[in-house]
Image (cartoon, rainbow, N blue to C red; front, top):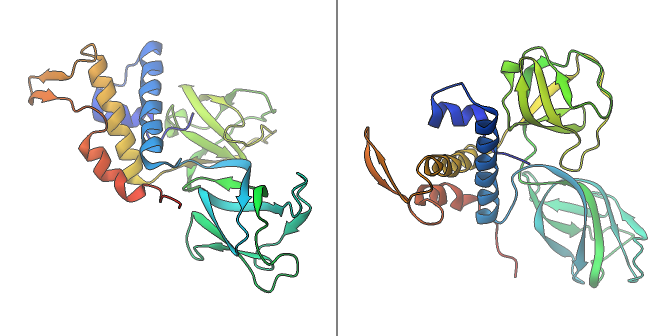
Length: 272
């Protein structure tokens, strides 16, 4: 799972109580995941970073628009004769440029007219193969805590300096491995290893930990949707909620207008 808002954010906004049962935690993570996926669906793009190999049809032109957000390229190859083998490996700048030049994500690849390997993208199905990092952003922030043990490639209990530096629902980066935090007990993070296309690996004691962060509007929209589901859960999913402090609330069908307004600038373009 990739959540744009975490359990502590939900607590601060909707619960105002740090005591959670195991059942409560599971339900909070469920609605947070639902909120993140609703954001992805509405914007027609994921906002988390993922390592993957993807193939695209060639168009016989010098420009290739991508239906997916591209962050970095590891390898880019083309199949020039349709035999299913990607014979030609292209080099960035020498053979192609990523666009936009000074921003991410990248949404188009242009052939460099000076390339000696290729002049246009080959026409036909599945002619272009890209191995790289995909998503809207791969921004991380440094966490104060570090690991306090040697990790093998299978251990799911990660000991850190201070568990209070983290929250269930966050995705962290240790070296080049992404881990998803499912729960926290004191200073031990229970994680899912090697998520989002990364590989579970060994890590030394005192490894630096970074945490993925997302666009503020995206995180806020996901949290708003999750909070709505959480409050409806308390009223058997009723569409009308009576709250003594603020009166009666009528729940809209579909995405809340405030969620749509926050997300509209992030909706993916339609390729034609």
